[in-house]
Length: 389
Ligand SMILES: Cc1ncc(COP(=O)(O)O)c(C=O)c1O
Image (tube, rainbow, N blue to C red; front, top):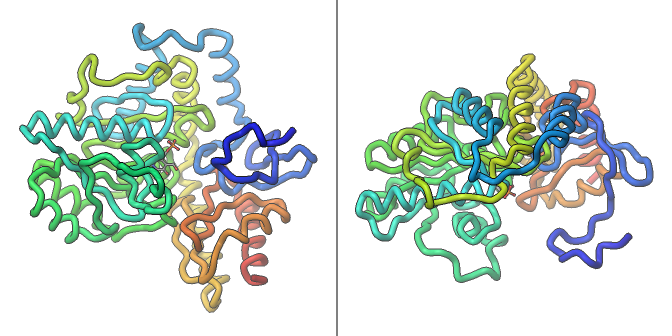
């Protein structure tokens, strides 16, 4: 087989993975790899998880799709479960992260119109990534991924990340601002962790100005940082939270959760999706969310994250090859002094799957079920590769 029939959106792909089990994947030549990427923060429970596979099988034998013209029991159950976990009031289910953000953007705009603002504007951050649809691409603060797709939508302005004063200035100078959309930690941007009080200060700014605080937890949600949502490390609630990726452990599902006034903005006819919230994906995601919150799994995320941090910092403390180690739970970034792309094929050669992002960052997003032994293999392999560069 060759890839010539596929649009070249992902470039050439050398390895073809055909089977997975736990934290391991196998290619079509039978070679085994330790997965320290989870399909980019998707398979938090690892591959072929018994409860997830059982839920898939059972639901496939029961019902796949009905449309949202009918009530869907698993959609309601998953909605209740996420509501209890998040402190939000209501949820809209989508098929992807970008679509979850589209729902959030539409909530912000309609919220603005309800306040008499005809040109509602959303503040987003430089270095951010919010998706590939035109609205989420416009919201994205990374010029490289936006290049070639102008004209963008109006109604977005960018501020530097981790700079509350810059956001304050934008709010003070623009009466059309209705919302702030921000990642609690920038994932694609290179695992950028802001100051401890960054989000709560943005919360205060939103409260003072009647703005919606929208958190993009598409990458940071579903246990990735050791809390179900990253904002739960702090003591405040956003108005809107979006998530996807780890929510379905591999099935396509996203969610836009909202609270209080923001939860009431979308009314019949305002928004929808043919596939969003279908019986299959919501039944499986309900099992995924339940499993993520059981058996101390999130404690494992925190403990293993600390292990990664300690060992990587010890290994590279005096290295001129590594600038910084950034870790929150199992979001791990190793910022190199040079380009990080060459680490990926070298790791593959040694049976390890990692990722390079933001030019010079090696990104690890291991399954949340990874063992310490597997973490040590990941760390030892990376130390060997980076030291030899
Ligand atoms: C923070 C964030 N937002 C949005 C998206 C887009 O999600 P999707 O690819 O599911 O549309 C991503 C994907 O990487 C992401 O990391």
